[in-house]
Length: 558
Image (cartoon, rainbow, N blue to C red; front, side, top):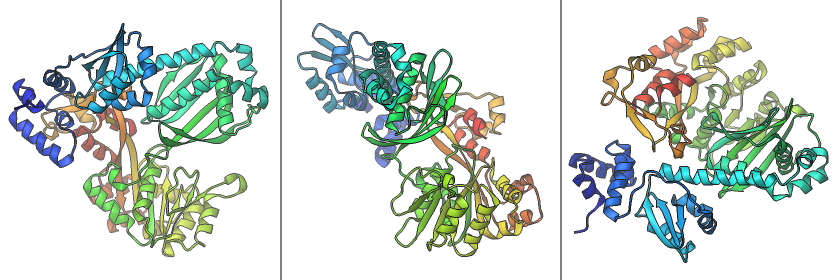
């Protein structure tokens, strides 16, 4: 009888029978590969599993690889195949090519690699996926550097003259080096899951940074002479005036990168050393809005779903910029989006289009404000209304009037917690009795980074760490918390992806009474906690204990 991976893992005492049975049960239930289940449950690390696979399939295991003279192989194999299959050539000698793989059971891509490397003897080696990812990034970072070298062929004077006229700009930006540089910046941003690209000029150079999972990372530092060329290319792509470098400009680019529809909002501003460019990337292909994927625990998810089924009233989502408020609102609207409901929104800007929902873009330059837009919407026979943000008393009063006349209204406020949203409305001039009679609930939220599953490791936390989130040692499983060590898969940060932490303040009778008494935000919060509300920090604490995020992340955003 042929040996299986489970047999080898048991033979080598990497897992025991109970752990194997538990993993197989979870594997059947989730349909997740058995190796991933074993790693997720912490029964074995990736290296242990790869060593067992190496033994099972007779393929040599390497924990580290270095690229050596592989340009020929890289040129023969399509980039998409390398990225998708996580297989990378790392050494060539004569007619023999060494290729690193992380899954020896994935036979089709191995056959594809052999096909593209016809005429070569291909030897496969097992290697951890993060190491393969690192090597791929390393190679293409080197390729990006070679693009810079090609740009050196353009004289500095020519680059500085780029913005002088549209014709010159078009001619120059049709040159391959500039196009390649901008393409590398954009395509790499999509690969790294960046939400924003910053291109910042300084006295002696230019810095390119990506915002990934809410944090900025420096990725490129071109010489100052490249700046005008890069900016002009981006301006042409976004239909901006390349001759105007004294005023801020806003534009838009629509691209298809790596099979994804990407909408890019471009903003330029004049700074002391040249124009600064920020591009916001909106991935329209992967975006799916659902309350079930927002990181809600079951009890809170049930309360939120129950809350949004009210026929009228106001629901407010609060938090700073970049805390995921728009995504929460879109997810709530998607839940309500049926043929029986008329849903209309006022947004600034409209970030994503949702089929079945009418979305209005605000234009303050021509006088189309949230207040005017909301008034117009109410003449369109809506059932559900979403206002991007309540910024002033006028908008707040129209929203209240809409809820009093039988509409369900969603909006956002910029406050640090749920209770502060009550006092913010009062500070705007809204009477307490109107708030208590129209608002159904306030939900504060933050986004925290998720520990990278590839380099996740356990550790014994200090008393100081436990005290920071009021964690009792008995609340921990095996007395440990988790963190990411940093690997190629997460750009060395230890985090990959984000999830939400929440605080839902329901306007029940006890909270209403506290508001009507004129109590401050802390007293309102105390009453809500007494009635069962979990604070942002308490929600984050739960995700820390479960190994989803780290104490540092929760404390960073709370």
